[in-house]
Amino acid sequence: MKIAVAGKGGVGKTTTSGTIARTLARAGHPVLALDADSNPMLGISLGVGPEETDALLAARQALDEGEAEHEPTAEGLVETFGTDAPDGVRLVVVSRIDRPDPG
Amino acid sequence: MLGELEGKEEILICDMEAGVGTVLRMEKGDADVVLVVADPSAKSIEVARRAAEIAAERARVIVVANRVRDEADLEAMRAGLGAHELVEVPEDPAVAHAEREGLAPIDVDPDAPAMRALRELGERLAAQTAPP
View 1 (tube, rainbow over the protein chains, first blue to last red):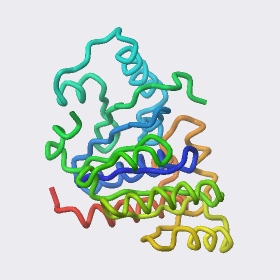
View 2 (cartoon, rainbow over the protein chains, first blue to last red):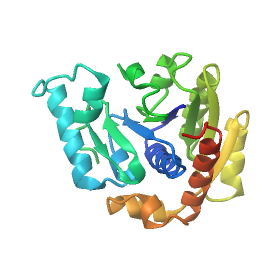
View 3 (cartoon, rainbow over the protein chains, first blue to last red):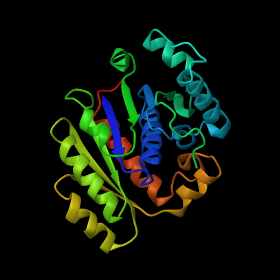
């Protein structure tokens, strides 16, 4: 199953994504959570913490700025730009970072 | 490239770019379910109404009516978005409080009203997906 979460900024889109992802994982499903928002804060709502969320953001930003190599495969992308969140959710930041200092 | 990931993990959930743009670019098959999140502000309801209308042509749409404080909020959201399946999530200070601390609201207070509502929706979706 593929679930997309949409809406205006600031309405609770990311909280919804993170909470639903965790609940699906608790129900026993393998879950891959993709953060495609240009203000990528899904890590917080998933519970990976601010430091790990920032680290993922920095890795993604290095890619955008040409400092890191593009991963040639989808698996490589999940490996390099991903991290493990609680309940076994795998989180990957796939957005370009438009606002590196999100407020 | 994201298409390559399909099937390797059972459930993909994508927190999309804010606004209607990404929904406009979505093609049939990109998502089975689109959760359209809105709060009771007129602007958010209008963005959600357009997103839901477009997404409904391509996928199952569930509107998440978030931050509902009272009957008037719910009525405003039903008026704009009632054409779609709608899940009510109450206004809940526990959510903002947890995220300000950098923590997942589901960890800080899993029984907070907003968490209960979202967990119910998640459990419903989980039950509708074939078991792993």
